[in-house]
Image (cartoon, rainbow, N blue to C red; front, side, top):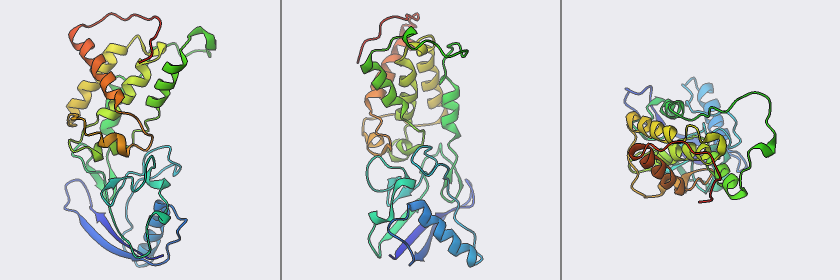
Length: 258
């Protein structure tokens, strides 16, 4: 199949960028989107041109590094898919495809389609940990967790930190990412010692990084490749309010399903 690509090219965060037009006529429908970009780069290298810079690692929908906006949608067409999981069969012969990096002031462009997402790492550093002893593996029955709580914690833990939520949000908010990281630890017994401090510290770091506020558009949930729900934002907001207003003491006891 043949496709016409409009690829964003930019030398760095302070450089002026723009779209560059390329045509590919040897695209196979079973190629992944990144394999198609590999083909484009091979063509550019043969022609003595600078290849397109883009991020990738696992190429299995696990790491979230492959952060591209394709035809205006973070990660591309479809639901619950990363860019590397998009197959060229999702497009038609002769289609024009617009490819650009995630757009956010907190994700400065490194080059072309690669952005700097270390702001997420600083949010994690602010409280995404537990103080549970890291010695020998504990007895599984030592910390009983009701099944609904375990399932909800796993739903939050599915977040891979790709940043699609930020790219899709009209406010460039990182609430879904932060809420997922706050919630998956705050739901479990092991996460209770830092529960309130975690919520307060991570939200404050998120604000310090310059991310916008949530106004419940739910665009973040729609583009999340793992389907993380915005209900975790509400849960994080409750924990943050308690931590800010009441400064509750840590109470480790039976967990209730939410």
